[in-house]
Image (tube, rainbow, N blue to C red):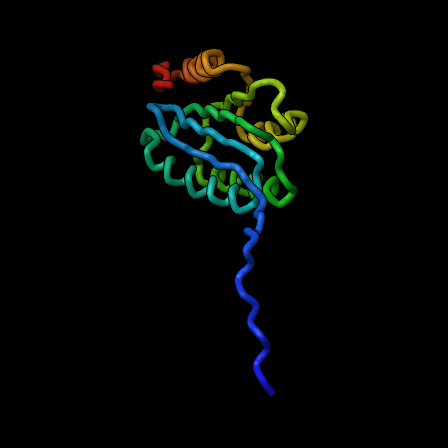
Length: 158
């Protein structure tokens, strides 16, 4: 019996679904994240690792504000949503919980109708607010830091 013929590689690239990206950093007492959707479960797992690494740069007392900017899209499949919920719960159980989270979400991005449900994931462990532009978002972060007895932070360069 002769071996099965081997097909040559396809000349047409396989289109893979395009998913977003996330960056996480720490600026003084503020964890600053920029998320660009759409989101899937592997991306949410990568976010968990990025937050864990950034968490090592938080102040020793673990008291910090959180600014999460969402760009592009809020589209997220159910697996991604579950992975996100597990991640936020895991950080909470390890004591990595911000004094508040401010969502910076400009009006009109695809999937914005999902924002209230997304914010509820964080709301289970801290106050959550929303802003439409960076300046008002940073002002909310500083107001929340001040309410927690922490010094205000200068914004990062944009």
